[in-house]
Structures are given as structure tokens and as C-alpha cells.
Image (cartoon, rainbow, N blue to C red; front, side):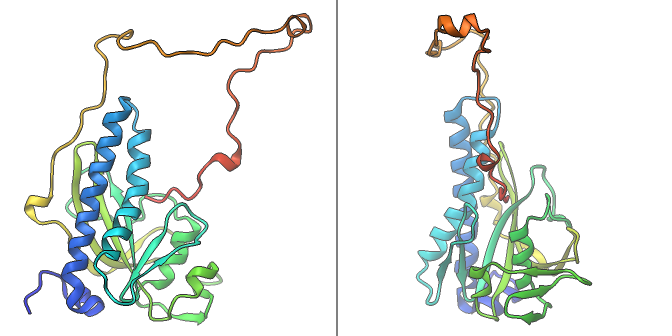
Length: 258
């Protein structure tokens, strides 16, 4: 049967390769929609809302679309101690991440940000690697990564497929899938199979939402601000007024992949 998927993908996914490829591409298109909608609703020149929508939807939409294929053996990989869940299909973990915000013809040979602990663990399932024990993975001389329980319980045949993409406020610019290994302790990627484009010509969209800007600094409704009156005792003893409470360390999401 004719297929548009690369040979390595057919080897991993069999006759489901094209369906999985299309599901991954659809997921990124839906992530684009969610990101742009969040940015438009947020009406802000900053991209906090858009970033949050993109980071969460890249995982959630992929999981939903793959699960909807009803491929036997597909399951959700959860309890990873991070904000997202992964999907395992044909004993393959699919991991989406934003490779860049600027247009490029292929993904970089370097991980786009600091390699987090879970990302390093996920590369235990990269091709051409060997298990030493069910829970320890050799990543270089005297450098072993212990897998969290959920990952350590996956089948030994599990492999990792990366789904890098380029996305900004102009929309989804490019997307690929491929297999790579992480070079030792660093962040360099060794692509085992050349990344192949996930998108057809008509799937690369240039929709975009321009950043919100008001016509003047005082445009729009005034926000309602709660006024707190200081007591006489606070004034007497010169107690400094309470402004904003600083965020604690636990409020910071450390595993902000993608």
C-alpha cells in the first residue's frame, strides 16, 4: 500500500503510520488555534496566555487525537510528576516540542532549552541505546539517569519519536517528526533518522493574530481596584503597607517543556 510516511515510521507504526502522522499534524494545527485564541482573548502585548495555551495543548491535543485512532495497545502515560501526560502508541512515545519561533528548513541539532530531568530520561528510549538495568540508562561515562517509576515500567521495546515544530504569533510555520539520541551530558541531538516534514503545503498556515494594542493609554474600561484602608495602629507604628505577595518557589513550574 502506498504511504506518505518515511520508512522508519512504517517500521515503527506499520499500516498506522499515515494515520499517526496525520493525527500529529492535526494536533499542532489545533495547538496553533488554541494559542492564537488565547492571545486574542487576553488582549495583551505579552504572550503569557499564548505560551500557556501552546505548552499545554501541544501535549493534550496529541494525546486526544492519537487515542481517537483506537489503535490496539495505545495508552496514556501519566503520573510523571509534570503537568503533562504522554501517549504510547505501537510502543512509541511521541514527544512534541517547539524547536524555534523563527522559520527554518529543518529542526536544530541542539535541544532548544536546558535539558530537564524528564527529557533526559525520555532519551533513554532513543534508538541505538542499551539498557544496563530496567531503571538505569547510560548517557555517558559515569553518567547514569534513573528513570521515574512510570517510565521504568514501560516495555523494553519502547522507542521515542520527537515532534519538533516552529510556531509563533503568525501561526504554525513548520513541523517534523524523527528520531534522535541525546549526545552524552550535553544538549546536542544526534538525528538517527532525518526529520521528515509532518505538514503538507496547505497545512502550513499563516493566520496569525496581531498583538493587542489600544489606541491610547487610557482606552478601555477602568479596572476595579479594591482599596484597603490602613488602620490607625498601622500608621502609628509605621507598619509598611502590604503590596504584592512574592511567588513562592513551589508556585514556579519547573517542567515547562516546549
